[in-house]
Image (tube, rainbow, N blue to C red; front, top):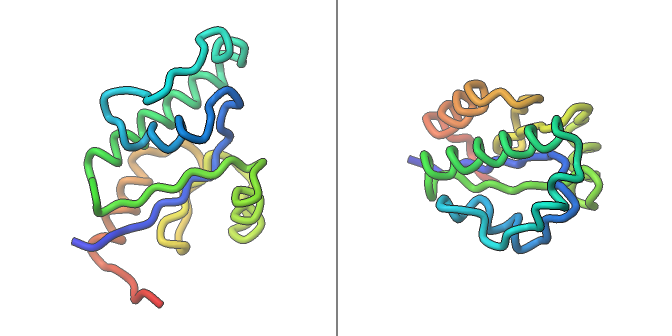
Length: 127
């Protein structure tokens, strides 16, 4: 099996520091450094639920594909997130971009999984 790169452009809640975001997707048992519960609860419930669903999906994908999947998460407000949003013409979040090639907008777990599997089965030529 080959390696697939998954870039996720999605709002990251402000109380999560850089270390937490990195560990979130490597630590299947938990969340590395915990954020203050009050900070998390200060966000609207819909945003909390969306962030938790995204985190669960990425943990699941990381566990399923292991070293065959490289996940990069960029907040649309960060320099990388803005650049990727312009480069790939992203208008909705979260957006999942596989191998700088195909993308899926919205939290479509089945679609993202299908796209990853198709790229693992038929890898493109790397530059």
